[in-house]
Length: 400
Ligand code: PLP
Image (cartoon, rainbow, N blue to C red):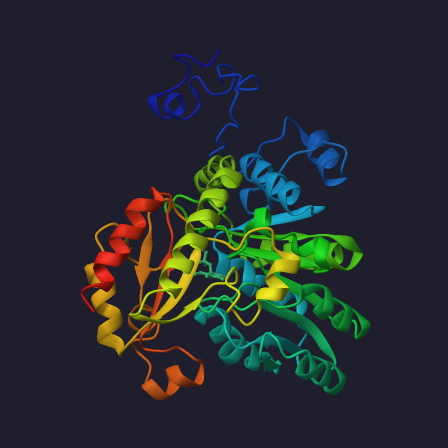
């Protein structure tokens, strides 16, 4: 053994580790393998690894056993054949975009989307000569025209979108895009694999801010990109190669938290779905609410699409309070259960006005250009008991 051998420095580094390492193979939970690198017994083993005969990971940027289990679980949930987890949803999105759109290439995206994704497409991608067409999520005519006009590498849209919960007709989008050779990537963050199987609907890639429902506890930042089919797998292989260069690797501890959160995904999403649909209906009937944006409501512009491709409508409800910015903020400030915070998909209900939290630095004209209304409130319905959520929101609306 190494006990007591060498100086204090040598012992601090090696004692207990080489021979006395705990055997964890029978651990019920997947162990958190908190390592940056992997070792080999001898040169023959290194060469065997290089030639694919010795399965290992080489170095933490190229993979980790805990992360791999999380990837396999997400792939299984999405009906995917491969998955790549990364340090954040934005890391997954930016790496995907950089890997799949060539210099001078074209990308088609939709009007309503997470602000930073739009920012990347409109301010960073142009540095590589990349152009973009931005279409209304429901405008398939505009999609077809853009596909005809531009050699398009990628279609990328959320479904449902943030914050208006617009839905794209994934089978129809995929049919049109594939006829023109474009890869289809759907950001399924708002739907989760429990409510929507984007790959089965025809997408090649499905992206997640794992930070939200997948990890599900408001305690970790992570992203995931899953792939199915020949086109999807080839695309993900390209993304993985660039990921190894760009280096947005998830920390093993974050991967462990993601894995733990995933275990209760179905149960949590069922509760989110139920409470969100009930509160959406309740809000729609309220005189202080001008409009409710939730794909489960018959009034939603994409309700028919949502019904056809989703089995539940998710835990986010956006609504417009009658009045201005300050009418909305009276609701945000009046509730007692939700925290005022960005993000969504965790146990705690979160409430925010997109204008205040995500777009405060922009002029009213710039906000109008991307459709963000001042009286809009985004509500991530948490796992609290429904009756408490409803009573709290109603008393806050009374203050308007
Ligand atoms: N996609 C959607 C739909 C989001 O709402 C977000 C984050 O808010 C992201 C992607 C980015 O994910 P992350 O915050 O994990 O980087």
